[in-house]
Length: 140
Image 1 (cartoon, one colour):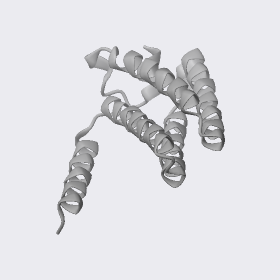
Image 2 (cartoon, one colour; image 1 turned 90 degrees about the horizontal axis):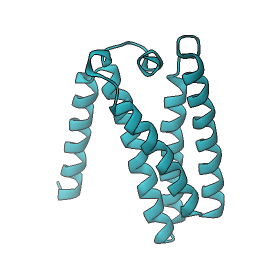
Image 3 (cartoon, rainbow, N blue to C red; image 1 turned 90 degrees about the vertical axis):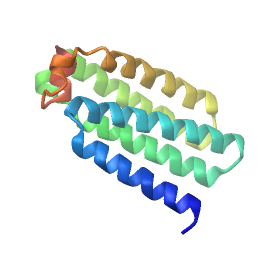
Image 4 (spheres, rainbow, N blue to C red; image 1 turned 60 degrees about the vertical axis):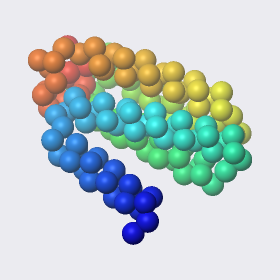
């Protein structure tokens, strides 16, 4: 077994264990971090002119953002859910445009937006971390 394969296996096991043990708040944080990682990787691919890699990384980032969007509870979350829904939709559209034009500035724009969401998410008091609905947590 080569070193890279062993490292990938370790990362997969470590990620799977983290998901199993995570509360709803931690799961959303993991998704946000995963999206940020994918977008940073996409930027590296653009710099290296690895357009296939860029497409794969942006696609995975878009999938994660769409997953975050799918977690929104539009009934319980009120204006927060509505605003996040619109923001996630905007991010997906911008990343699609970035993919078509190989524009790292657009990717940076979405990274900044995701970091803002991450900062807000990390600011939620611990007593709300086990709520079943991420939007309910965000609305508190």
